[in-house]
Length: 178
Image (cartoon, rainbow, N blue to C red; front, side, top):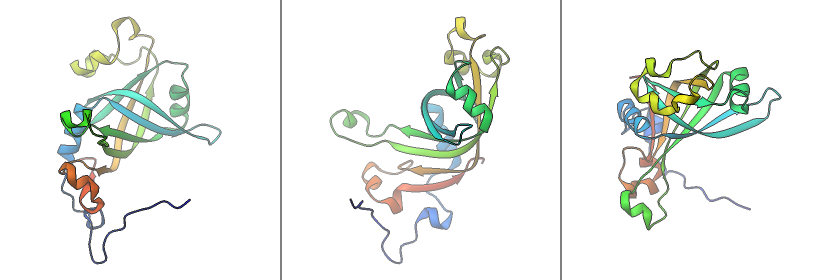
């Protein structure tokens, strides 16, 4: 089965190839602050790839996730400490309720620190993190702190909806800090 891909036209230099982008680090962080769902990719101690959906909150250019102490996420991410993260960014507003509009995406590598249950006072980090966990589960949950590294790879962030059809316009690469 062949998979169709749209290659850039000869002579067209994309933003991702030049290192210049139509989107800034600040815009990406703004979108990360607004979103709340991500997919984290990691490797098990046996070397098998896994991915898990998580709800997160941001604070201080980091993402925080709360998970059960005995979960695969807590155990496997603690063992490897390196993860990939993809955040879907809703596009299209009310139009997305009637038309199949794919989300934009923000992807990046991150270093993960798995804080043992009860060791992080969520409310001391940020008021926004209070909603991450119900008060009755705060002492029992493991908090995973994700620090983005390198570059954000974006698709469809900071471009018009119709430009998402044009990879040379929709792709972006920006530093995670900045």
